[in-house]
Length: 516
Image (cartoon, rainbow, N blue to C red; front, side):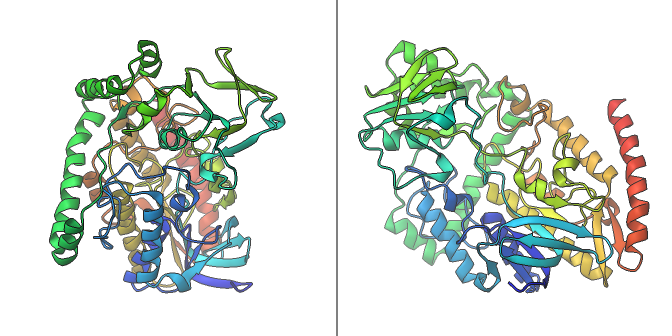
């Protein structure tokens, strides 16, 4: 990129959210934009996560854009390599390559109140943009726990999202730390080739069978020639999941039957009563994400696998020590310990109108108007923002809803004309967040008796949407200008200074109202 390039829109990230935003911008007639990507190719989390067995737990025909159907999915639940190839295909078909800026990690972006634009510093140069769309995603920055003695471990250490393909696991003593969605795919994939596999399980997951199969040639031809059949398949998959939402959000007790099915699934593979006891969760199913696998439990039953029902607490040379005191000698440690979801690193790199970073603004918990706009950060939108996650369906549905909102945001700026910016009013952000948190109180994610990555450090659920995808689409169909303050270029500095004072007073009033 040129030293002082200016674009109308800068999109950050080239996963589903970033590529989707790029497609939508082109459809709105916006061609003056760039997609900033820190890596050397598109794909986001489906580029970074290349561990053995990596696959999606959402059916392929639902885990793809509605505007870019793929009749050639090879399996009902496709693997990482097929999803990444799909995203490369989207970049090609929709002509996004000229807009991509690879090896351009965003170091800092700062709002210029006088020029009404964002100054962006990247690893490949500087640029400015009228509007920023942050699509970095919540599953992009791996989280590795701070374990005493880990630095002195003489063997190999890596995170599941940074898999070392040059390291040969065959014949090694391997420790898998964590039992989330990545771990239950890695364990059965590596179990046959390692000498010993020790699974450090802080909390057992609920696991249901994954009914995966190859999609036949007949099905593929049918979807190619009669496209309505692919749409019908997608619609059926979506509808089933919409009907499930009530149990998660309003009637968690109805999930008891699902728990019985999960226990039966475990009993078929795990015959040892002691091991079954270690693998049985003590919280309501759905409180953490329900995991899908038909190979996880059979792998754990193998003689070269040991399940330690305790978290890793210390490393002493090659010896790993669990919180319960048990020990294991290993050659390699694989962390499947998740990502920085409620403390996204990008938030430290966004400086808003009042000089605060987004991380500082979100110190008490993430919140954004309709999951997109944060107060004090004009013309900045996030894809997969606060409280837009799902516990039972496809995130592509939520992304497309946010793309609708982005499209109308751009239209509103066009209607305003001239140099203009929209800044979410603090009162609107707080009102939206209060409604979301009120609905969250009776959901299984808040009442199920578990501690999950859905919750932030303060115990608030700032990640999940407590409703159906239909409700969210309705809520993000268009931008309500009453929820925004319009900033104009002519008096931008004076308006911003006045606005900061109003925000301080408004913030105080909101705080008093919340505490009342």
